[in-house]
Image (cartoon, rainbow, N blue to C red):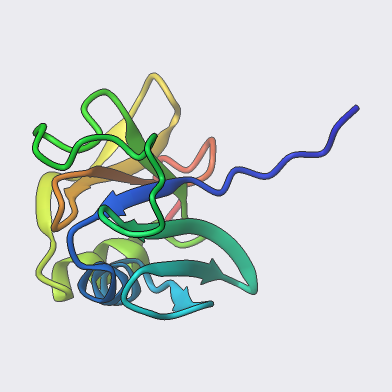
Length: 134
């Protein structure tokens, strides 16, 4: 069996600004830095990549003129401490699409955001994290 780890890459208008947003709102750390490409880290592991739309001649990044970015794709992250993640997102002035709530179908708590490029970001607690015992 192959061992694979997801490392989604999104195309953005301003790599540095997007990196700052993900660091401020989700607590990620820069693993590469730069104006064209960034790797974002969580607990020493790369969890996503950010790439400028118009560099390195990657023809399959998509078309920056088509909106919204990521239509049909959600960036989904599981947080060890959903309350802390929610407070951080609010303090980072993130655009909240859905506030912290219980998703009974998934049996956890989650909240939904929109990043500066229009991508939808979901932060969820672990399975069974409904906040009932908290």
